[in-house]
Length: 374
Ligand code: IPM
Ligand code: MN
Figure 1 (spheres, rainbow, N blue to C red):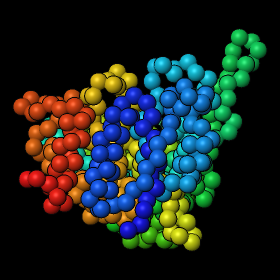
Figure 2 (cartoon, helix red, strand yellow):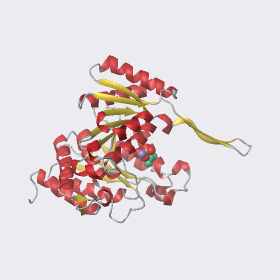
Figure 3 (cartoon, protein in one colour):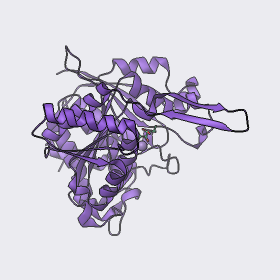
Figure 4 (cartoon, helix red, strand yellow):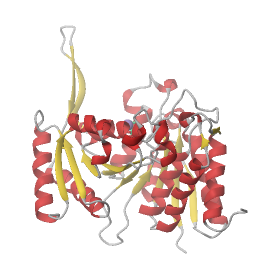
């Protein structure tokens, strides 16, 4: 059995609590010979700033680059609100994305039947929802230069961020999205703001051309990103795969997250290009939720997004599709059984903490694998 090198970066806030629950799943899989994972652990975000004065140290960055996959928790918190911009917690996350060239961010939004009532939208709008947002992750306004605040000398300052996309960046993210659409309902919606932004004009042009030349059988729609946000809350089931840029993807995936009942439910995968020789790709898996400093350290976090991120890791990095399916099934079953963390709690359900939820999912995973004490 191939041994996979996993680099764990729990980070700040609820990151470590959520990661603990994944560690139990990894330990179980190793102990039972279901997988062979070697884990190493590093610091990212505020905890890295406290130890090394930067969002991630060079040594941890090198470990991340050498790993088969990185599991990332969350970064940030009020404690680091005033650290210099260059070394703020988020800089660690952005450096990982940029240096590992993880240009494709997959954010599935699935509404588990048991949670349809926890969404802020009507149950029939979200029941059975299964959409996938493909967010460009290494370009656009997040990284474009110039990015600065200059002093104009007259008591005024000027802030500049630069939205920039080259053809190849749009082409490669479009191909990832089209390929994924082919494995699903064959329907892709591209979102940009071509009515105001030149980058939107080029985005639209390039995605259209890739569709026409390489994926004529995939149904392609275009939507302005603001209208897309509105449609996401009006009738989200009209979508299958959505492809969009870094900033719009950030915002639209938060909207999509709430359709599923809680931000605590959404996993994500950030993938690089497949290596020309080995076919393997650099990858990092992280929950979409942040560090939630308000509830951190109390054992109240919802570990489902973190566990589901590990399921995505099994699926996309290690081709352990069956185990990924079973782990996801275990999550659905535990929710069906009425277990809830605080963020998704509703009347008549049983409230548990992060460890209670993690243990229940692991127990159910063991049962699914025929290894549990039923
Ligand atoms: C996300 C987060 C990050 C982003 C922050 C923490 C830099 O909001 O992954 O969605 O804006 O990309
Ligand atoms: Mn975000």
